[in-house]
Every structure is written in structure tokens, then in C-alpha cells.
Length: 347
Image (cartoon, rainbow, N blue to C red):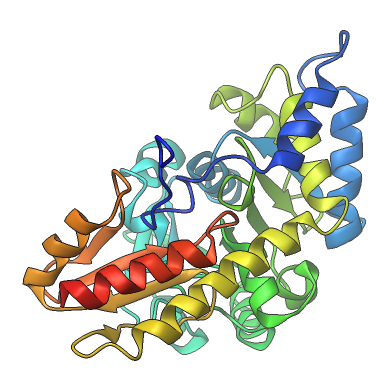
């Protein structure tokens, strides 16, 4: 048995894809100008534009929190606000970084399935022009959501129309954008450029990269100050070629789609099997690479003890007894089948 067996806690727990490691090794030759003034970065920017259009302005950063928070800092002034689902990563899992670093107020909206609708967002566009209130400036969604659900292009377009009608912007946390596109069998631009998105983060780390995410501006002019924001916020890589070459490997061919499709397929295999186990229920529709299962509380500890990984899963909701099971590019059918057997025994 491997010293580090695979688990289902997070798609951040997986290693880097061999093709990504090979690209890094190939880039590790000679001296290259630092800070992104190099041919590797130029090639990666070209790959982004092939997927998202010629107006796309991509900026690579170290991680997803940096991508999201710096995007909001570029989009909103400190007296402005961001409308987002209550379950959004921005609101729940970034340790107050949007408020502290970007200086914005988050207006969290309760949703049934992690998806913000235009009607729900419209309810928070209030007190516009009132100097006593934070001014709504950004609508932010996650694709796929933190509950594993996926926005359709029409749903995103409706939010974009609402935002633009009120002279606001639409931001997408795309940590799992590749999974959403693969799930819907649409190009990446169908969920971003063609749907009216203004700015989005593009997740690499969760889809096979060693390290690295990107902020991509689609509306001309919004990226004007971002180079300074990125530098001041300590997200400008000196050896940028090693971030850039990973994105070229991911986006230059079909690796992004292969990795995401495989992760999604493993999640559906897991969901199908779980559906046949008594006393276990799916908490949300399984649409991307996340499975949320509700089971008796006493079974959760037994399941954790039975699985080999040091962190086999996260307990999402202790009161309801819901656990989160994430599949990734290297999840195998044997991994899934082993989890299913352990789950059946635990309940």
C-alpha cells in the first residue's frame, strides 16, 4: 500500500498530473526573464485567449484565494459590496480575506442548492446612492458551486444581465470551472465569455496543477490596475515560467477536459453506488466532481476509521450528518468501490 493513499476529502489533496510535471521539467532549462516577461507566459496567455477570446487578459497567481480576493480588489472600492451565496468560498473559507484585503462587504444570500439566481441577487441591490450603505458593485458566483451543483449558460447570462442593468459586474469563482464545462459538455467560453461574465478565476490546482490559478478579465479596462494589485498583494511570481508552463500544458490540448471529465465520472460512479445503500442519501444533485452524502451520525466515525487515507473526507454538516466526498483527476474506480464497500459496512 502506498504511504499516502488517496482519499476523498479535497481535490486539493491530489498530486500533480504527470504531464504537468513534465512541462515543469521541460521549462527548467537555462535562464528566462522573470516576472512574466518570457515566452512561456506569452504562450500561456495565448492558450487562455484561444479558449476565452482575444479580449481575455489572464494573470497567473499562486492560489484560488489570491485569485478571488485580488479580482474583487480590482473591481470594487472599499465602500462597495459583493453579492454572493452564503455557501460561497468567499464567504465561508477565505478567513475574511475579501473583507480585510479587498476591503469589500459581502452580502451573503441563502440558497437552496448553492446557486444564486437573478431574483435572489436582485433582492440585495438596495439603497443604491445612500451614503450610509455599502453600495452593491459585484455579483459573485462559484462554478461549480461549493455544493457540487452547476450553473447553466442561461443561468449565468441572467445574472450578467441583472448586474449590467445595474452597472455592476459579474465575477465567477472558477476553481472548478473545468469540471462544470465538462459536466455540461460545453466549451469553457460558454460559461464565461459568451454568458456575459466580466471577470473570473480559473482553477488549476484542483485540476492537476502543482500550484497556480489565474484571474482572467474579459471586459476591457477592468484589468488596468491589476498588475500593481497583484504585486502589492505578493501574488506576482518571480519565476513565472513555472506557473505559465503548467497552464500551457493544461489548456494547450485537452488535458483540462480529460482531468475534469474523469473526476466527474468518478463522482457519478460513487453517487450511483451510494444511491443503493440503505440509510444513505444524497444531499444535493451530483453534477460535477463533488458528492454530498447524509448518513447516520454513528456511521461517520466508523467510515473514517475504515478508510486508509489520513483524511478520507470532511464532515460538511455535523448536525445533518452530511459528509463531502470529492473526486479528482487521479481517483480510480477501485478507490470508489472501496469507499462504497466501507460506507455500506459502516451503516
